[in-house]
Amino acid sequence: MAQTSSASTGDLTTEILQALSQKDPINSTEAFPQIPFEFIKAALDRLASRSMVKYEQIEREEAFLEPEAEIIVSHGSHEARVFDAVHKALEGLSIQDLEKEIGDKTVTKLGQGKAFKEKWIKKDGSKLVALVDSINDVTRDQLRVIKETKTHDAKIIADLKKRKLLKLQKVISFTIHKAEKFALEMVKEETDLTAEMLASGAWKEATFKPYNFKALGADQHAGALHPLNKVRSEFRQIFFEMGFTEMPTNQFVESGFWNFDTLFVPQQHPARDLQDTFYVSDPPKAGRPTATGPDDKADYEEYFKNVQQVHQDGKYDSIGYRYPWAEDESLRLVLRTHTTSVSAAMLHKLAQQKDENGRVPPARYFSIDRVFRNETVDATHLCEFHQVEGVIADYGLTLGGLMEFMDMFFGAMGVTDLRYKPAYNPYTEPSMEIFSHHKGLNKLIEIGNSGIFRPEMLEAMGLPRDLRVFGFGLSLERPTMIKYGISNIRELLGHQVDLSFVQKNPAVRFDK
Ligand SMILES: N[C@@H](Cc1ccccc1)C(=O)O
Image (cartoon, rainbow, N blue to C red):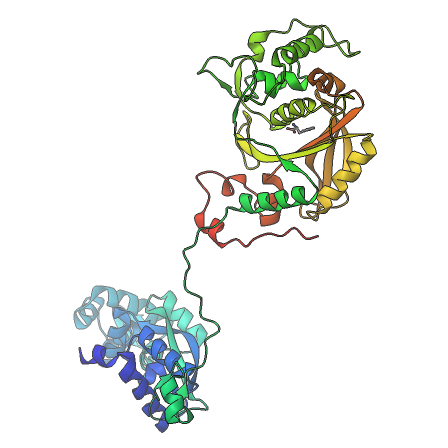
C-alpha cells in the first residue's frame, strides 16, 4: 500500500530529484524497483518538460529462472547430484541405490545420462563408479549468475532457454540524468501572465510554463464533408468559373422517354435491358410528358410525336431506326442511368426560348448527381455513382473545339495530356472517350465520355438546325479515388465507409 501511495507522481518527482543529487545518472529499475513503469514515465515527463532531467528509455530482455532452474541453483544440476552420490559411495552404487539416494526418478535418469556423457562416471559390473575426483557444475554456476544479474552470454542464455530453464521478458527502464534546470524541488510554473503579477512585479521572479506546441488541439467535434462532397464542390467551382449554370437534378426516377427515347436510344438497345437498368414497378408507368409548371408553354404532345417519328420512320433528313416504336416502353419508369436525361429536358426547355428569327441563346449547363446502373458490385463498381455532366450549346462549334474545351476543363483539375478515342453513343455523333495517363498505374485510363449531340435528338426538340451541342460525362468517384488514394470504392461510398476517414481527410484543391 505504502508503495502505491508514494507512487503518485508528486512524491515521485521529489524522490527522483533526490536520487539524482546523489548519483548521476540513475537507472529507474535500480532506484525504484517497485514502482510501475507508467508512474515513473509520468513523473519523468513532468520533470523533463521543465528541463530538470533528461532521460532515455531502455528496452532490455531479462532472463528469469524457471522453477526447475531454482532447484538446480539450490541443489546442483542433475548430473552433479548423480556424480556426488556416486563419488560419495566409495564402493560404487547400484542404480536402485542411486535412485534412493537422490529421491527423484527423473533427476536420476537425466543426471545419469549427462554424467556418462561428461565421463564423470562409468559402469563397473552392476555398479556405477566415479571416474574423476571433482567436477565443475557449469549449469549451476551459469544459473547463479543469471539469477543475480538477469543476463549472461547470449549463447548460454539461448542454450538454457532451449533446456526450458529460463524465460525471457522484455523490461523497460530509464536512464535518468540531470538537465540544465536541475534542482531539488519542482518550482511552481505560472501558465498565465496576470495583471497582478505586472502590478506587483512578481513576474520578474515567476517561472513560466513554456508553450507546448506539440500538444494536440481540443477535438472540435465539428461536422465534416465527405470526400465526394469536397471534390464535388471543386468541380462546381470550375463549372461556375467557366460560365455554366447548374441543372436541377433532384429526380432519381425518370421515364424511359427522358432517359432514353429523347436521346435517340432505340428501344431495343442493350442499355435498356434489365441487366443494365433498374426498372420501377410501382407505379407501373409514367404519364406522357406534360408541362412542368404554369410558365411552361412547350408543346409536349408534339415533342412526344416527333420522338416517335424520328425513331420509327425517320425525320429531319434522317432515315430513323425503322422499328415499331412503343409508347409503353417509353413510359416505363427507370432509376435514371445517367443525368443526360436532365440535359435533354434542359435542352428541350432551351428550344422554348427561340426568338422571332428562330434562334436560341447559347447556353452552358452542368450537373453533379447520382445515377443508377445494374452493375455487379466489385472494387471499382457500385450500383450507383455520381455523374458529372456538362452541356454546351452554341453556333459554329467543332469537334476540335470540344477537345480544346475538355483539355481546359480537365486541366483545371490538374489532369493534362488527354487522349481521345472514337466511341459510340446513340445520342452523339461523333463521340469520343477521354483517356488520361495514370501515373500510379502507369497506363491510360478512361476518365470521361463525350460527343456532339445528334440532330435527330436536337431538331425533335425544336432547336435550330445550325445549333451545335457538346455533351460530356464522367464519374465523380474516379477522380476522388485518385485524389484520396483509395483503391476500393467501398471505402468511399456505402455502409463500410470508416467515419474517421471522412472526418480526418483534408480539403482538396486541384493543382492548377
Ligand atoms: N451519358 C454519358 C455521358 C455523355 C453525356 C453527354 C454526351 C456524351 C456522353 C455516360 O453516361 O457516359
